[in-house]
Length: 190
Image 1 (tube, rainbow, N blue to C red):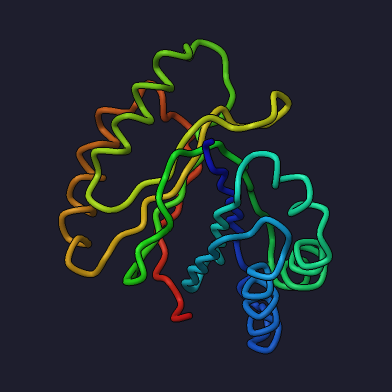
Image 2 (image 1 turned 180 degrees about the vertical axis):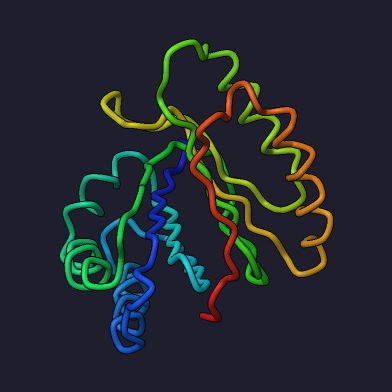
C-alpha cells in the first residue's frame, strides 16, 4: 500500500519575532504525535519554514489533517509568523527519510490547462533521478490546487550534486513546471 506525504511550505514574515518562530518549530515537532504520522522533517531558513510529514497511507490523511496537533501547528504555530503558505498531500511510494538528511527540496506542480497526465508522470520520474531520497506522487484530492508534489531528502555528501542536477532539471522541466512551487531549506536537527 502506498504511503502518503503532507507538505507545508510557509513564507515567513520579515518581522516575525524569534519566540514566535520557536513556537512554530515546536508545534511542527509535535506533529510527530499526530495520528498517522510516521516521520516529520522540518526545514527552516530566513524566508521559509517547511514541514514534510510521512503518513501511514492515504487513509491516514484525514485523521492527521483534523488532529489537534495539526490544527495547533497551523493556527497557533504558523498563523502569527507567516505571510503566506502552500501545502499539498500526495500519495508516494517511498521509504522513510534518511536519518542524515541535511536539506529538503519540496515541490508542487500546479493545476493548469495544457499539461497532460503523461507529462506529470514523466516529471515525477525525472524527480526520482535527482541525487537524494525522493518521495513524490500525485496529489490525493481532485479539488487540490496541485497535480503532484513531493520532497527530495538530500544528505550532506549529495548536496553539491543535487544543486547542480536541479539547475539542469529546471531547464528540462520548463513546459510542465511553469509556476512550480518549490523551496530548498536546511533541515533542523531532531
